[in-house]
Image 1 (cartoon, rainbow, N blue to C red):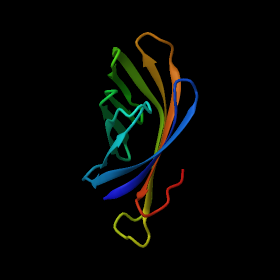
Image 2 (cartoon, rainbow, N blue to C red; image 1 turned 180 degrees about the vertical axis):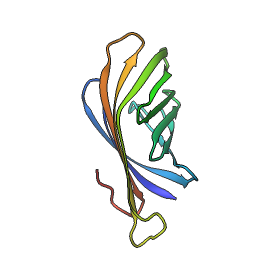
Image 3 (cartoon, rainbow, N blue to C red; image 1 turned 45 degrees about the horizontal axis):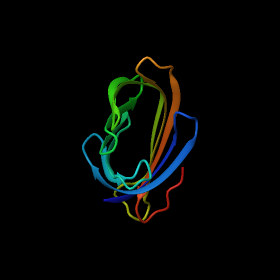
Length: 148
C-alpha cells in the first residue's frame, strides 16, 4: 500500500531536519516494511531506503550515495559501518528510548491509521565523542494527512 512517511530527525550538528516522502508499505507478520527513494544530499544522487518498523525495533537500511544499516530498539546497542564515498567508518548506535504507537485500524479505510515511532540514541563514529540524536516517524495511508 502507498503511504505518507514523515521523518523528523536531529542531526549531528543539532539541526532539526523534516522530510516527507511517499513509500510502499508491506504489512508482514512481525513488522512493516517500507521502501522509498530519497536524495539525502540534495544534489540529485538517489539513495534507496528500506525501513522495518515494529513495536520492538526500527531498522533503517540505505543503499546508494550512503550505505548504512542502523537498528534502534529498547536496550539495543548496534555496531555497524557508515559507508560513504570517502570511506567506511565504524559506528555504534545505542538506543536511549524507543516508543511505538499504532492509532486507528490498518484494515478499515474509513478510520485510517497512523504508525508513530520516536527514538533517542547516541551515535559514536570510531573513537569520537558520543552525539545524542533522535528520530520521529509518522506513517499514514497516502490519502490521509500525516502529523507528528
